[in-house]
Length: 336
Image 1 (tube, helix red, strand yellow):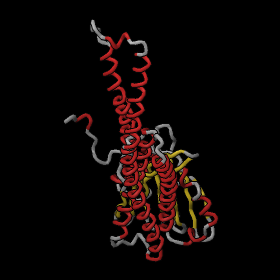
Image 2 (spheres, helix red, strand yellow):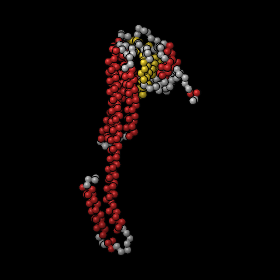
Image 3 (cartoon, one colour):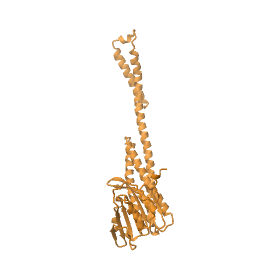
Image 4 (cartoon, helix red, strand yellow):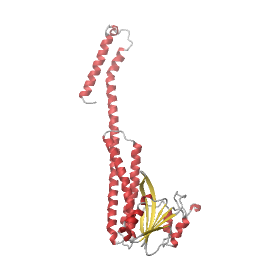
């Protein structure tokens, strides 16, 4: 064991690649009537709070959160380790979640990582870069009164719902591409194998995000806890239903892609068989012609036929009749 590579527990080490992103704090303090935006991590008990921490390279700032909020150092260590699997854990007086997700940004699919901690009246989310998929949150805080009136677990529902909506948008794009490939295969058109395999990889990547989110949320909701209010349960049930249906659709699409790949391979095999059949028929036509040519091309000393005045014309007519007869025979047998 290499002791120099050993990292002791509770070590605050950022494992991501965005070391040039400075830490930015966006603090939404809100109640039923209003919302205030600051850059402080301190919270007032008379408000509910949502704090976005953007940029994880300055580990001292991240570590300093445990001085303000009762966050276990092991949890902060997981926050900085961006290679964590998707999980939702109940930690007694707070919920810790790690989400690996995708979203659309200017027509491109972006991979992202988010972890969050939910207390009784505060949610803190951690991001490596600016979370563009949460841009509509500020609009919701200003215009969606129900968000300000309900407990913070309703805000968590809204965040998870935004993540799910982005996954659904990506799935719709992939599903449209699958339908396009299906039409091309049915019409016996050649498909680009590299594009098809990239699409399969994208669908697998999406499933690796959706399925763990559904399983972890289902596990958390089935455990007895005080962090999720009963009045918000219908919203989570609806979210679970969306996740389950999306997961099922992804599974069905992956099965459809396997079938399309088999169908395309069968089409390619059929095309190759037709080509080989055509080549075989042409070869069969020339077998007797080659025999006649070889026979009359022998250098026998006494070969009277070769001296006949109309031998070439007769030989040509015979070859033509043989060729026409064989083509007629093949057509009658429907061999081509």
